[in-house]
Length: 232
Image (tube, rainbow, N blue to C red; front, side):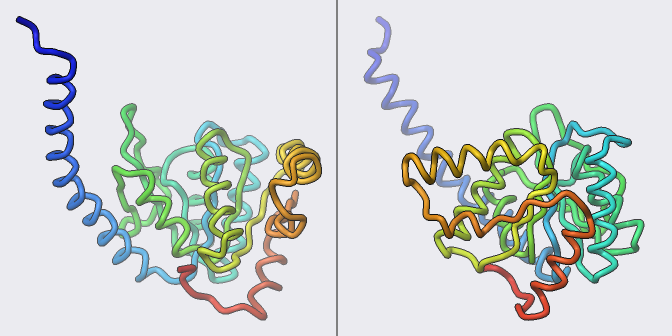
C-alpha cells in the first residue's frame, strides 16, 4: 500500500529539518572566512555589472577605466570574480597595481574566477546571501554598471539597506545614463509620484553618471568629509 501524502510530507520535512541544522555550520564558516579575508584588505569599492559584457564593449572599457582610476586613488576593487564587467573591474585594478578582489560564487554551470584577481584575494562562496554581505559590509562605495537580474538584485538590496539605515549612507553610483534612465523614470513617475511608495529624498541616495571622471570626482569629494569604515 502506498504511503499517504501526509506521511510522505512528514518524512520529507523531518529530513529537511535535519539537513538545515547542519547547514548552519557551513553558513557560519562562509561568514567567518569572508570576514577574516575582507577585513585585511582595507577600503574598497564594489563594482557590479553583467557577466555577459565582452572585452571591447564600451561598458567593459569604461568599467576597466573606472576601476583603474579608483585604484590609483587608493581604493581596492571588489568584483563578483567572474567574466564580463567583473573581469573588467579586476583588470583595471591590476593595471594600476591596486588590490583586486574577487568574490566568486559556485554555480551549477560553474563560474571560474577571472585571471585578474590577486591570488590571495579570491574568496569562494556557495551562498549568494553570504557573498552579498561581503560586498556590502566592506565597500566604501558601489558602482553599478549595466547588468541583468543579478545586478538589479544587488542594486536594490544595497539601496534598501541604505534607505532603511541598516548600513551607513554610502555612495551608490549608476554608470550609463542610456541604460539606467528608463528605470529611474519609472521609479519617479510610478513608484514615487503615482503610488507614493518612496519619499522624494530616497532618489537622492543614487547618482547617475556617464564618465570615469564623474565617478572618481564624486568619491574624491565625498571622502574629503566622510570617514572610511565598514558599513555595519
